[in-house]
Length: 429
Ligand code: HAM
Image (cartoon, rainbow, N blue to C red; front, side, top):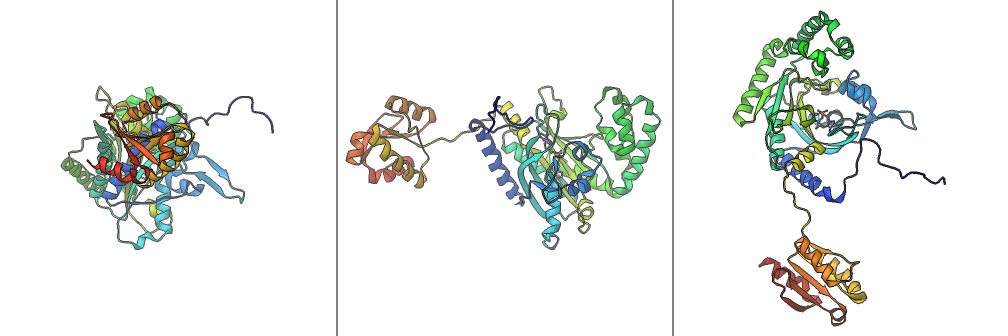
């Protein structure tokens, strides 16, 4: 085998989650499952890769996500597959494939897991990242749009985040969007010479994306562009108004932003993004924690019956980054008991005793490779253990163990056979 000259590094845009950071991930995972279940969402896990056609038919062929960011490959059997760039398409596919249309509607599903997009890595933007997603499929009621936003807000609040705000827009249905697109194209066509090259392409391929442009010279034109809310049909207008009324009732801070068009093609009616405000009360795309909206045509587009749906996804890395920035306190594993062993005999007996205490459900830690009692007690103290169990040569021979109260330093010798009961008794005090 050829010798590697330089150590191999993690692929660009990916990272390791090291032990010190795991406490954040554990906290997020546990809050995600508590909040999702309390709002009535059942967990779903879909494959990390699907047929590429699924994303072309849902996210859209002319979107950046499909056109530029998908990790696609041909399998040995000749199938065109893609690593999932997002979760909604897979969930909608699973809803149809598993006959969930026959269940009482709406079907509420949640997921967490890695997603993959070939993006230019930068702060908050990775090539492998993790999402938490909620999807309510099979009901068109505007209260469900509000509930999705409420559940995301509640989760972020449970994780200790503050100053969240929602930016909302409505993209209408097929009817109103057609009229709007025509007005938008007409407006931009008259200003074709003043817009960037990308916008000229967008004008031809996907006019709604014109509102996504960040290019300086396009900003004044974008600011004066027709507003989609003025083109909503009666039904879409009513739906949007109801969503806003529910948000008012929930006291969720929001503002309308007619340039929120989202980067995925399946949306209809409500679309939104959740931000945290920085010190100046400003929001930037980099502090968008998540987004979502309605996708009433997606299930039918993928071959199912016409089925309205709404959902959202939060980026877990961005949520954790914000928790760290806000200095949210997250406790790591705190053992109740620390096992101190001395000498070869103590170490041998200690290994078994450690397992017995763990089996009895007592949170225990050790530092089995250290010999000095002083060093071991120092670690016990640092970890915040209430008691240390000291097992030296003599105790190993006598089949006893010393229980040391870490706060008072008081020690008592007890038979090894009784140590679990003794520890439990003391912990219960
Ligand atoms: P999205 O806006 O593409 O929506 O992604 C949702 C969130 O995932 C973003 O707001 C961001 O926090 C995170 N995210 C996206 N790309 C990256 C990246 N490259 N690196 C780090 N974080 C990222 C969706 O994916 C839709 N499926 C949401 C949805 C669910 N709509 C309806 N249901």
